[in-house]
Length: 420
Figure 1 (cartoon, one colour):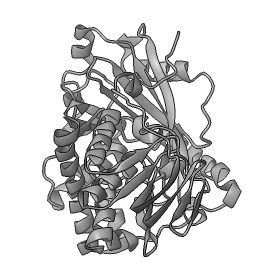
Figure 2 (cartoon, one colour):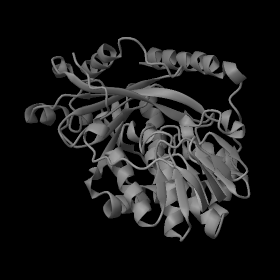
Figure 3 (tube, helix red, strand yellow):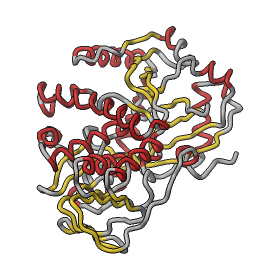
Figure 4 (tube, helix red, strand yellow):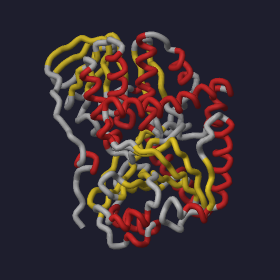
């Protein structure tokens, strides 16, 4: 079995190289990081008339923005009830509305900058047992109570009308979540940012930041404002942010092209899918008739041995008829999570901002983060202040934080397994 060393996203996107920073520049805003958060920030700031420079250490979309599952999901990685505990009911209602706005923004941005990004809607939140089904029923009822009445529950017998598998106990259908070719979307935003006047540099890693001066290997950017948009790839560039985010590795496989008859059997409806386990399976059908399948996570950020065979086994467990299918692409990437799974968006000083920790819900929320940071720089910081009211604790353990998380998540996986 020969698996491509590049991602399916990179194999199916029109990618152009950008220049490396060579020399010294001055600007209004220096954005560090060329993923969805950084490019969205650059785009929103440039559209507001600011002079923007973006620095990316590799290439645009090298990190999670070009390696994710492409799932566009309403809301946050935690229920709005959890956010309510942090900010109160009235502010939680605003959070809920902002999450809805984030998906609406994604629709508008896709239509304007990346119509080739294959944005499609329809989503199944699958449950594997009665306990998960009851929890999902409560979640669906809560969405209705908050004003989003589109989602509805279906039982085991009805799942077959939507997905060709007998593995699941029931599901919630969400008509306004969906899927997208995330790298094509990002590259479209990057072109839009450049058209608005932003300058994007690749292979230009920020090596040191002192105040609002950013040093790279071959140049220096002096800015009025700095925005850290590195997420799981931050490393130790900024010590005040390092402990509040944990990088974890997630892995995706993409199969060979499937026959039309097999596609009709396994996807009677064109929906993106995720189950409700802690270490979840998520999958969807690509525009070129492949199954894109992601599963679990490595909390050591290390690729596990025998991953191709493990992923193939998981696919066949859901779709037994795919036993002879070949995996053409497989890759991993880092997701940034916070302890409470709420995005951490704020500022370190009056002119230094950051956004990270989208915890697997970054396709839409990253764009919204860029929007409210641009608002804060140019006009009003009221929405940014709402995110700043959420207290984000550092991951405990210092250098031992990764082993501690591995132990905790291993127990969570065991609980998932025992409840099935």
